[in-house]
Image (cartoon, rainbow, N blue to C red; front, side, top):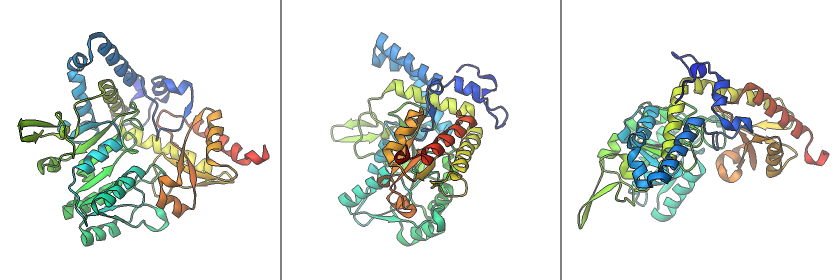
Length: 414
């Protein structure tokens, strides 16, 4: 990576050279990108890594290119390990966070009557997977209650359910996709460790936005994508697998020649590392782009990122809360940079298209994404805006002003 001078945090300082970081982000010239919770804008080092590898594949062949870049390929695992505070052997590459989550779930030998204990704010795809397991294997899905006012899961109530129900799996999403809520995953993890329960965390929206330490969280499994706040390419994610899970012999339902060795005609042996959750075929250019994106985030610094990014979200949330006709929906004491709000006088798609016309990237959250949460909030849709550290305060103010104008002048009055 080239020398960015003061663009990166030095000796623990929290100020960043946003101009230098934006110069490293080509998309900043085209749009106000407030959809980092969907896909972050890819930085130049990650773009270069992907382009260079595709050129190499075209020049010498795909197998030969991956062999030539073996050291860089290995650095993906080392970089994610540095991000999570684990060893490279605990990391598996995946095609997405959902791919990683499904692989992990498939390694658990669920039986009829087993309990999955989760929260009311778990990610939609995880919830659907749990319901599928209920249909296929007769598991029971139990949701721990929230604290009053919807400020996240009631950890003590969840711990009581752990003791009473002895769940086969405890699962929580660190930051749900439909709001800025930050769940107390480390508190949940402490209870799981005390009771020796299997614990899986979805860190899809927190990886690259908030510091992650799997030892502090106390999870056995953790999944995330690279395309969101880590700013990597689409079609990529990773799975963390703890040493105790590896030692216990957990393996995915469908394991292939990369994750296992065919040791005799009637037997195979899983590899000893988290690679047992991987498959032979890799999008190596994507993986190298992810490695560069993770290294970029680490060089910027998760401490300054975790201060600046939520602070931009807070600024936007405060400005929107002052707009008549806007209802900010995020709850919890220290929300992340996912800002969700409902507006009066508009339908979902037209409102998003109106923001698109101002070159403001956003995303819609629909009732089907958050059946419990949106029912509690009495909304059928919300708009989600998610700034990141390379966005500016001026962009925040501009976006809030555009929203205010749109809400003040809905379609019926235009």
